[in-house]
Image (tube, helix red, strand yellow):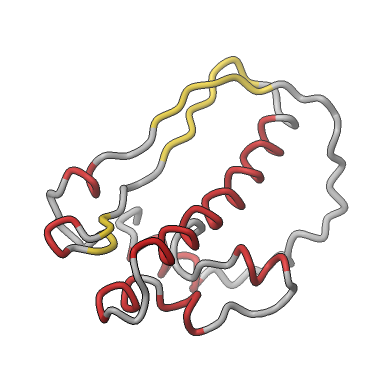
Length: 135
C-alpha cells in the first residue's frame, strides 16, 4: 500500500521496523510535533521507493501502453486538512497522478521467489480491499 503511511523508505534501507515518527505522519503534522517539510520529505522518500519498484516492473514486462496512477491525492495542510479524509472534495485529494508510458522486458530481473509466502487465508486481504471500497 505504499506510498501510504507508514513511511517505510528509511526503515527498508536500514532493515528495521518504521519508527513511531515514520508511522505517525499526518498526526505529527496536525499536532505540530513535525513541520510540513519533515513530513513532505518522508512522503517523497516513500514515493521514490515505490517508483523504483514501478521502474523495475516496466523493465520486466512488455506492454504497448502502461498507466501509472493512484486512488487519491493527499492534502498537506490546505485548509488545515492533512491526508485524504473520506469524502474530501479538496482538489489536492481528488487530483491523482496519471502517467502513460510503455514497458519493455529487458530480461534484467529474474525473481527468486522470495517476495513473500503464498497463503490460502485471504481474510486480511479481502478486509483491506473492502475497506478501500474495492469489494
